[in-house]
Length: 273
Image (cartoon, rainbow, N blue to C red; front, side, top):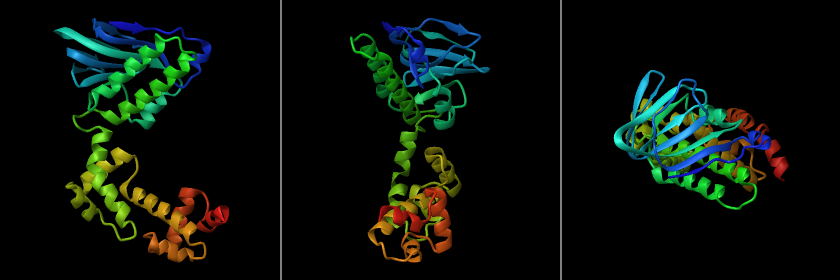
């Protein structure tokens, strides 16, 4: 078992993310915290345990982990003869905001992990930093904590095989199709057929994966293409740019462009020429 607990200064507590404690290959003891604790990522390496929180019981075994929110009551314990975990305790001004608004986690939960090795590597990184003679350890650890959170966002999910990485892989043909056919009329039925999903399920998966609706994404691709055309053809009329970008109505194109870029197509041109 290895463990590292840094000295936390006032400056550290001002960081958006900072390390409190980290453990590797830990023989997990029975923990009960009626008042909760700090933010934690606890990943099963071997054996099985259970997490109790919010009136629910979750089985934690290899390929799963626990994301514990600050101040949320919880209890966890082994249900096999040995239960080995890697864990990271952390806090910071931006942690709650990132987990809830960016990553979409409401509170403490058990998660399936599609790439356990990636998250376990963060534990080793933090231990290496802590046991080194490097300067500014707290800043280096803060960067690893941020990487850990983005890893959790990408490689974990409440349901099996439903991580952002897996969903993006499922949608890859659709992203390619939109990029190649943005200038044509794109229908939901055709795009759903391409992915093998129903239109309703596609909309749900797309929103979960990108945090925007599918036609918002299509408009974003079209605006990106229009910006390229505006720069490549400085004398082409805006209505022609709109048509080549997939917008049938030039006024609607200008409206979408201004909403997304905060300036009009002509203003965009002037800035870059």
